[in-house]
Image (cartoon, rainbow, N blue to C red):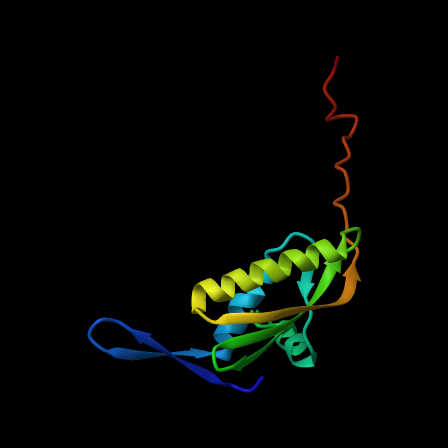
Length: 139
């Protein structure tokens, strides 16, 4: 991901100041917002994020691509969805959450949140605990 920094002018009564927001900051906000949605098994990244994961580094920007033109942001988010979930509902929830989080935290205008479902993960149920005959309560 190319490191780009967006300059945002913040005006108050006395003067104008500049705030710089890196693309990785926007990607992190979007990644966290998307990962919190029920039905998202994981974020889907490329080979670099797979290597980082094997090395034990948690990458919050995994699966998020950011394009900023002036104050407009377009986001592409790649996810793996949990089996049995309604994909359009999960993606709609991601789009709403990401748009709101990025706009609220940065003041930028989110023009699009494109969600790419790259896989389905089967959720493994925990095996039921077996009660041994010795541990069973007597009646």
